[in-house]
Image (cartoon, rainbow, N blue to C red; front, top):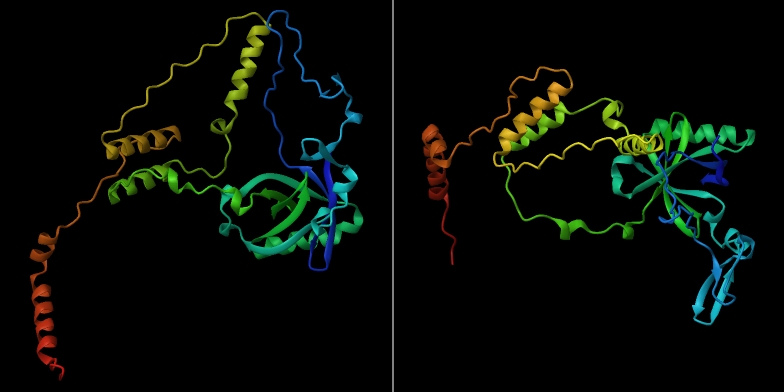
Length: 307
């Protein structure tokens, strides 16, 4: 059972749901320590008081705000737990919005909200059912770790999930990163859509969605432990210079189909020729003539305005 990170309540209107917050994700990365290369002695970071020039234990360490170089304002955990903020002890729902209205770049890590005891069971279920039927998500504010945050509440398998969200001013404007203007044809867009269709999956499961980096690190550690030769790294493929975009799209579609066990025959991706203005004029002479006659009639029918 994951440990509780924070306890409080979810409030919307006059409804309050006591909850415990637990992490919704796990980190399976392999961690490294720092060692002295000469003798494999562990290298650690020590917390040293600059005035006394000695290492201090954790119970002698507190928080403070440096007002000037010679004046520090101490801030205790009790001060932070009694902030003059409604969100200090509650996740306050401010609005409900469609999920598609929120840019995914603003959504960060997720947490499960666990009902805190039997008293929370009914209002918790009420919020779960209401969110599920409305097809909306809740936008809330809460105060954790020394700052007020914006959050998104949704339902996953009948459990409330809180996602941290970035404030609007935390998102950088990407305009300066835009490439130079370029034109793509309708055929090339159709080819890209065909490739997307060939690469579409129902679930993010299978070998393609495993953490191969962590597996590779584990193989290196195991080989060194058993004093075996290290596994050989695959030769990196040279990135190809795409001269014919349509040909590259066709080949990519074929490979994607083959990897899924589908018919890897030639993909029907081709650029349709667009009719030129001259060709249009030749094919529809009657329309053009009719248009001219109509225009002439309209012009003839108009009376000059009196001065």
